[in-house]
Length: 85
Image 1: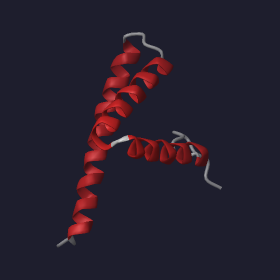
Image 2: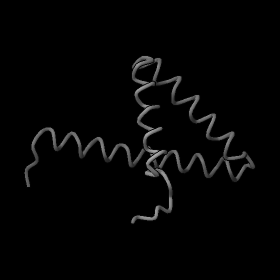
Image 3: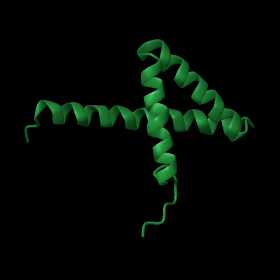
Image 4: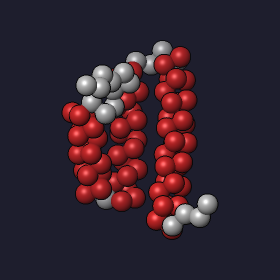
């Protein structure tokens, strides 16, 4: 089954995101097992991610990501157990 170039790029980006989430979940679990509170882990993760993103892509890109994440929080898209009505 052949994929269009755009479709293939989207599939690759999706796979990379899944792998990145797996790495983050492993780091999170390790931090929790070491007794680090979730709020501290979250702040450290945000700080690291935003520092790297600003350095690589600029402030506008970081601000756009923050807005996207805010929208996902407000919509409930990031809740582990969502109730769909």
